[in-house]
Length: 172
Ligand SMILES: CC(C)(COP(=O)(O)OP(=O)(O)OC[C@H]1O[C@@H](n2cnc3c(N)ncnc32)[C@H](O)[C@@H]1OP(=O)(O)O)[C@@H](O)C(=O)NCCC(=O)NCCS
Image (cartoon, rainbow, N blue to C red; front, side):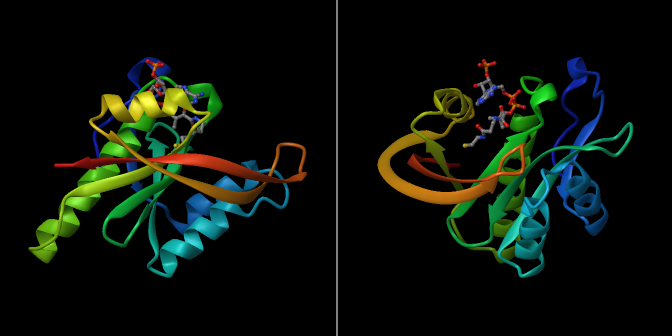
């Protein structure tokens, strides 16, 4: 398991972060909008060795309450960080980010070479997420990019969005 328990005041007295399993995907799929395919796709990326699909799990009942994808390249990038709406603001996002940093640490330690760093792209319209990262030691780079992606909304409708992101980086 990665990272430390978090979220005590959410009633989630123990939440741990670990790699997603096939069983987690089946559980996540029952809660996704029909046709979303996000959890299955992220798990396939993990199986292909492209990312680690990290999930935050409530120990009490095994529910997955948040997730993020950590790319395997160097520098590693953290993507698609998300925490269930009802349990935001209780440290779970922080726990997922910390777990990603620990994973990078372990990789560099085992390779014996490389830079301990992590990159994130944060939407220009998402200042709250940017401030969370900055609080955790990430620095703005001024490097901007546009990402177009599709997702299935809660009503099952496919939405295509173009997002402007700024790259933030932490080196340690
Ligand atoms: C961003 C997010 C993952 C943070 O998870 P969390 O468990 O709420 O995070 P923590 O409890 O560890 O930290 C709380 C901080 O997260 C940020 N945050 C809280 N709610 C947020 C929201 N709805 N959207 C964006 N950031 C949020 C704030 O900086 C907050 O600090 P504050 O309470 O002092 O304002 C979560 O809010 C979320 O899933 N948001 C929607 C998806 C998203 O914006 N992902 C980030 C992409 S870069």
